[in-house]
Length: 85
Image (cartoon, rainbow, N blue to C red; front, side):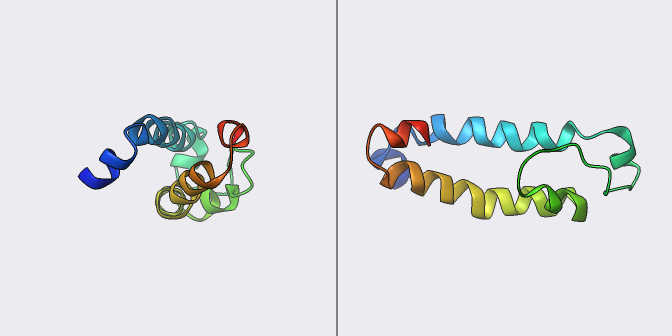
């Protein structure tokens, strides 16, 4: 982790908004969702179906796949497109 932070000091500025968004997405689900009706999802992400399986699945996939992919995309894309991404 120290090596990552030294190579890119803005790494945590990138990670924090994504983690907050993931947590906000899960916590923002309606009361019916939390009683076990996982089909009742209020989300417009293309991966909303993961929330229909279980919130832990959604969080896991976002942290293991989506976060590294987004980081890689921003790091490898040329300016000004990386800012937009």
